[in-house]
Amino acid sequence: MGGYLFLLGVLFLLTAMSDVSQRRGAQRVAKASLEQEADALAETRVTAPVQQPQLRRPEKGAIVGRIVVPEVNVDVVAFEGIDRKTLERGAGHFPGTALPGEPGNSSFAAHRDVEFRGLRAVEAGHDIWVDTGEATYVYRVAETRVVEKSEIEVLDSGGRSELTLITCYPFDWVGAAPKRFVVTAHLRGRFDAEDRILNEVLGSGPGS
Image (cartoon, rainbow, N blue to C red; front, side, top):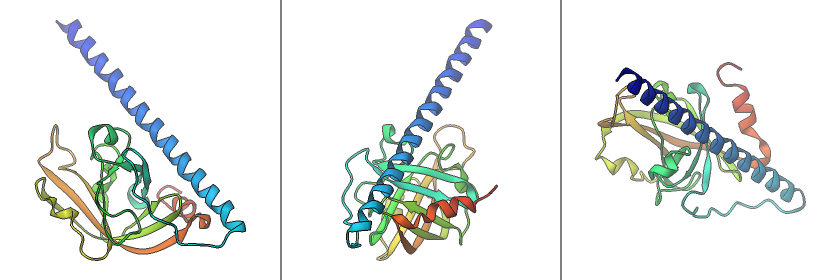
């Protein structure tokens, strides 16, 4: 019996390691794709007039942007959709909510024990950076709160450009957590892709 339980433990550990490896691989590929898009856009603007980028609705599973909160070591690429398969790759963007930079509530979700685990330390006044490849938007955290998982009103728009990050709560809960931790932030500014502002931000984060 003891040997059987040991084998189950080993199989569980190997499966968990495989999931983490796949998740990291998906994140590396997605970040490289965003950097390539920024490079291509910067080269185009050398010979073409600067225009406001056309925001398009992403297809399911497409890259939406990279979310960075330097103060709490959150750095994750988000994809369109919040289904299980998408959330195994990184953060997910709620379909039907605004895209980064648009008027409205741009809403994202991710696991509390992986991509969004740093949110337990986020505070009002922290900046959240969202890089779409075409531009980088900076939002400032206005508040954090804990709500029931049935309170979908957190996705509603308040009539301004805002960002909502959602994860399960409590952070240390074992199993399916009963509540949701919500971060609300308001848009402060926008930087063009060629500004490479995110490189500067990451260079000034914790441990730099």
